[in-house]
Image 1 (tube, rainbow, N blue to C red):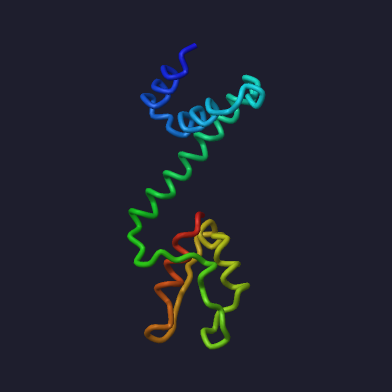
Image 2: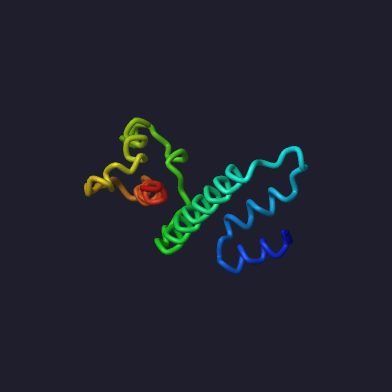
Amino acid sequence: MNTQNTLDQLKSLKLSGMANRYEATLQLPVHELQDVHSLVGMLTQAEVEYRNYARTQKYLNSSKLRYHALPEEILCTAERGITREQVLRLSDGMFIAGGENVLITGATGCGKSFLACALGAVPA
């Protein structure tokens, strides 16, 4: 079996996740190699994860969010009127699945856009 040929075929079929994982598996010592069924399952899982990651990155890039913000970076203080529990509840994305809206209000410069970008970067 020609491993380079297999690797080239995976890449030509645009199975990048599988190709990357297969290439990493080829670097393992012989005694650490998995059986065929585990290897196929691992390669398939790697492709699923790669495609989910690529899709998420594509959506984030096309969303043109102003800030690269994460919910963990939001400052939750009494002056800002937001608690860590509220951020965690919004971060789970259930309002998206339920078709609900989030209204963010506040004075100029208080972090409304940052909060919206942080919530926009959360996978639904």
